[in-house]
Image (cartoon, rainbow, N blue to C red; front, side, top):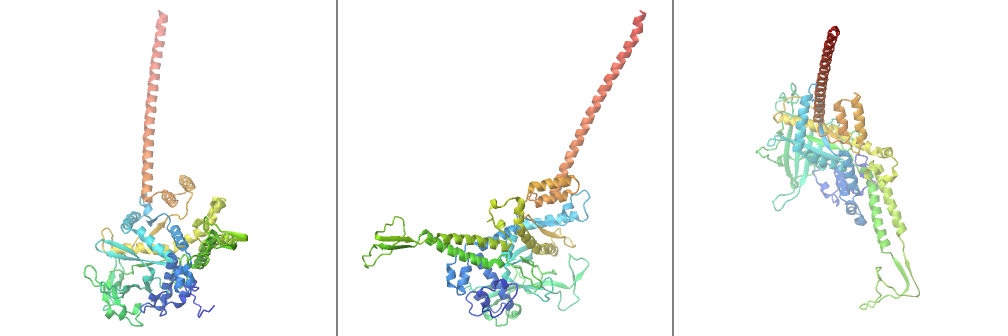
Length: 578
């Protein structure tokens, strides 16, 4: 096949692209920026993969192929199939909404709440208020679309003294360069966020590279015994802290070999914070790196990077674009067919004296001789075959991406005999969404843990010392559910006493019922039940009182009747004596 070497890594699914063979070489016309001397060589394939995927998302795969030497690719038609696949997978991943849930918070309103559940409910309320202020839903949309498209995304937390809360930002994964001292470690001890800043002639600024570094290190380089007690681990001393460095270098000053992790610090121009503090190894007073790397899939063993949702169907998307281009050409000859004339008298151009070329248009009249004839080239069968191939490719892409034809909405509803059959058709999509959410479960727990610790480090009001509460991101169902069936199931199970009220409300929330807060809903249900019980007791008491009054009246009437009968009997002997 002409390959000089066979590379098997996290980006092998792109090896069929000629553009990947020239990554990092001088004179590369496709990705000239990847030839920058400060970029680590082992990161070039990853960065090139991000650019290829972005080209597909923006209908520029043809331009990408043309830049690598295939000039005919400029005529390729791309109709947004890659972006549609990404957005569809993103929609199923996110569901209709996302909520922050703290463990045991739902038990806070019980008659005998579990130990710590009241505090958990208070923390959950604070986290949700923070999410509203920091536009968490918007940040998740930004980060997750990049993760679904590119395979990776990055969150960065920082304490803001003016706002008195942690701020959350998303970064392009192409700016993220983790430094792994131990490949078996769960997290890197040093993280670079780096990108190039273009030249600005109007401002008099030259091209430069900016690098923001988070690094774990000893609290004091001079005194190894220097320790610190962090509020989230009371009673335990730590000699580790996180340092922040934010600096810029002129590209013209960098020499070969001075890559991202070896930039000369004596030529760095450090940035300055608003309060005048120079960002040169600034002690953040925390013992963790506040950078969270989101992966779209669970990485393979020994890898740290996720995989795009369209990674394994890129060749199918290429085939689909080529078929669409052929269909467009075939539809042109079908709508305006090629016609062959024999024995026709062609009009002559008076200026040149040459016969004019005939055009197929409405109202055209051609004069034919006695033996003349007209033959039209019918390309409609080829057009129908191409359209059939488009449907076949769409089904293949939907199947191999596991989004499924039912998930993409291309499945004819009349072809589904029952709801059970539809559920089976959506089975691969359910597995896909489950795996994508599993890959993110721990990372969002880490995000909320870091956020609580930043509140504690910033000595924010209401945040006391102690271990962080376990919080997670709760996803809504990704497919429509039979809410009536769920309601009936919950009512029967709760009525039979096999489900608690908290579990019943949680099931209704998962089914899509508009319940904003489970604990508040449980409290309202119990308050209403107590009111109804009190009303029933009052009604029963009133009914009993009325019954007692009626009995007393009946007993009183009987007593009067007995007295009258006795008096009547006493009068009878007197009357007889007379």
